[in-house]
Amino acid sequence: MTEHTRAVGACSSSTAGFEVFFDGDCPLCRREIATLRSLDKHARITFTDIAGAGFDPSKLGLSRSDLMRRIHGRTADGTVVEGVEVFRRLYAAVGFAPLVAVTRAPPIAWLLDRAYDWFADNRLRITGRCTHETCSVFPDDERLQVAP
Image 1 (cartoon, rainbow, N blue to C red):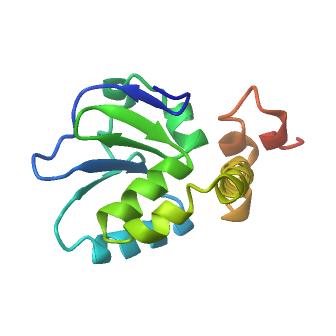
Image 2 (cartoon, helix red, strand yellow):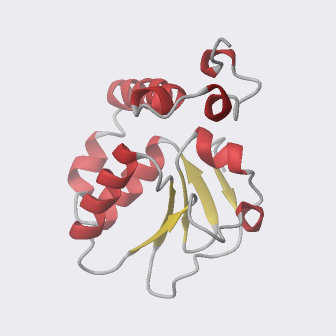
């Protein structure tokens, strides 16, 4: 397994092939998920809102901070993936496999990984949700700390 994948219990939906864990409090994330829901004509994706009441991250072996730091997904066999690979799997599931294949080319993959890392590090600021309390959810990452 790569550094961005690991095995954990299977997807909660028997028909879905991939489960995505998204921040339902994030306006950009909600927009992306709404687009994916509309494209998911064959119900291949299970959408799990990590901001929803009753969501328990411990079932994945991850903390809320882990899930807030980067997007995560889980394959039907329980493999957890994160970052750009989640988007690849989502868009492949809704019929964009040829485009997804292009994103695996080394220079493109490298650029997408760097762009996503930057976005993930700055997502709360970009969406106007960064306060001292919300950005301090990442205590070991100085880039996300807000000066008092």
